[in-house]
Image (cartoon, rainbow, N blue to C red; front, side):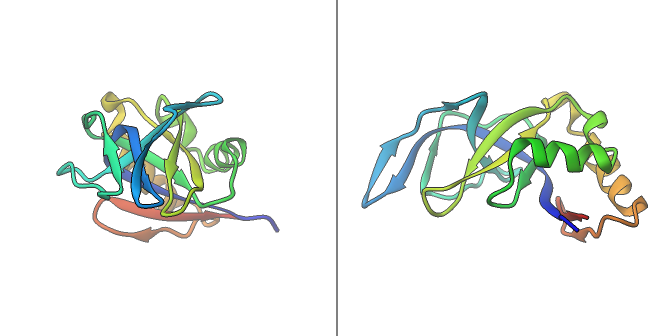
Length: 142
């Protein structure tokens, strides 16, 4: 059975301008295919100092797939769990500590209140095993 793992969080994002690599900051192409490249920030605007961002968005819901999952695999898993219908999602890519990128989705700030509803939906499905944090849930869908 094929599994997809992703993290749902209530957070802020910032358009990624630079990424620290090889001892210096390097420019980042903000658009890749049809995705925006962003850094995920805490609700208090905290973020990894290896990333330089343009600004911090208002709070929203971020869905980050584990490394290696495509946008279509994440979307299919979210649809299976009834999550994709809850928000107006846009494709993003978030950096890892290496040169890799994780695929994911973000809502608009007006859908930030959907985080708790998404968490509830995760708990209602026997196929989903949420691991809870204050503003984050890790979900595995079989």
